[in-house]
Length: 417
Image (cartoon, rainbow, N blue to C red):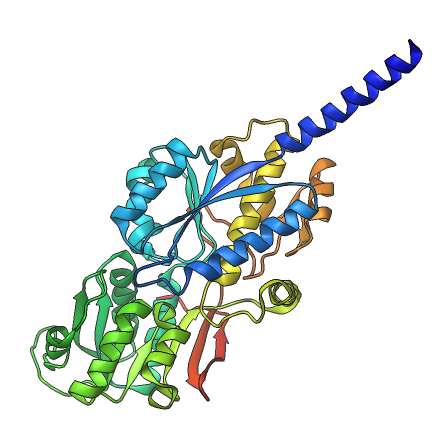
């Protein structure tokens, strides 16, 4: 009888441990861009997210992913988001790198459903300005707003050129970046001759748009004509691969200014390194230091050298923040709902608290179990979410050099406009 009692107790204990382990699983959806104009970004975002999940699993907390393709298209992304919420029953979503995707799905799908979504690369200033009754504090991002990047772009352009024309993707990303750039460039004496939008789908040719872009008609009164010094390429890699080449070959364009959306190794290959040599752009940067070095080493060990495309570290941080917040909700005996996870985000990411960095999830979980606050210092920098779900990060100035994309300098103090 005693042996039976001990055996039963052992079985019950095992069942209890298994139940706790199973209860720690959390299902997270991703809406990354595997096809369309941003297809270069999706696979790298997934790898970074899976690295964070792998490290958390080693520390005792499992994230199960359901991956969906946005197609860099808001209609396809809305359909995928509804599937993640209604069919897959995810409790959080790591979102697209496209503001043109993020804004419509947040407004029509995720926020109305009280579903937490964190984007690693949607930089449009419009996201900050979403009305509180529509955002409902369910939309976050681990990248900075283009309100910052546009200032640095304007400064950079003014240091190199006196006039510019702009081609931009006609969505929240392109519109927001272009508007901020125009203000910043004009404030420093620059002249904008044309600012021409194009569609989100990748076209076979942009010759008609380029013809208008090079019409050299000054946009504001008094109307003047003149030669634009540079064509600003505020689009995605799929678009830029087509129209930068056409601008060079059909319109003899010599100078281009790029942004985070066109910081692209595929663009470099498509156009040719020698034709882009020395041309510059901007992108949200990384704070660097030990957190990024640790992330870089871990990424390299799992997948090889990290590409130079933007927001890979931000994708890692989006998953890390979701996982840490979910673990905190669990430790506080809260149901793992999207709202409860959202409510823990600032607790794990913002000061005060014990600093924990990329890969330090065993340490983080131990502190959380003991009831102590943590302050996650991300691979991309400090992931301190403000009241709008935004973060502040440095802005990098980069250039095409020697067949590679290299950092020229980093702006840590962003000027006020």
